[in-house]
Amino acid sequence: MAYCFLFLLGRFTLKFFFGELRVIESQHMYDRLLNFLLFKVVFVGAILEPKWEELLIWTSWFTILGFLRIFSMLCRDRFEYLTFSPNTPVQAHLRILVLLILILLSDIFWFIMCISIFRSMLLLLTFECFTLFLDTVQTLIKYLIHLRDITRQSVWESRGILLYYTEFVTDTLILVATLGHYLHIMLLHGISFTLIDAVLFLNMRSVFNNLRKKIVAYCNYRQAISNMQTQYPNATDIELKEYNDDCAICRDSMDKAKKLPCGHMFHLTCLRSWLEHHSSCPTCRRSL
Image (cartoon, rainbow, N blue to C red):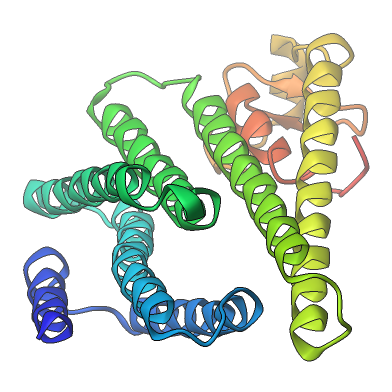
């Protein structure tokens, strides 16, 4: 009965808040659901004894948190679509914002419920609440930054920095929490060289590599930003006139620009946004 109600609630939520899903959104939803289910099967096999009471608790818990996570990720997909859609109705933004807030409040409710009832399994249960909270908060903050940006009449130079650090901090915390969660599972399960151990180890290695890449990318970004401020001079009016070209990143004309060692010039804000994901010149790919 409870699962039928959850299914109907899911159908209503999809119809009311999203309308028709795009093909890519549907594909992402099914892929995330499959990955979530596969890992939870491994988790249950590693942690639980064959007792129906425990199995029922974990199944119910994963169903509720999985339900919230799927819609949180759908909100992120729809947000990314709406940010590039011209003339988006206000109602479309409002619906996604309302759903994100509802997901956040629901997650907090289940976290409090977990603390009150399942203290013996607190670390295992609250991992999903914690990562769901961070994912939802990230989307919500990015959404609010976007709405603030489109209502401004002037260029918001801090927008890119806020977006970058929002994504970096939340993603890093999620990766650290996930790695800690895997280690906790392995400590509880022990090492017996079974298929479950192999799956856990592969997941741990993947998370560790992602965490390392993110930290290395952040260090490169900080170094590039420092170089941009100290080593890359502002282009003079004469240099801009001789350059006689648009910014290669945004394709807009330049009244002010930063000049790279290779001679190419870009808007400061455009270059900063580019350096969040790359460490080379956008035009000639020379390392910065």
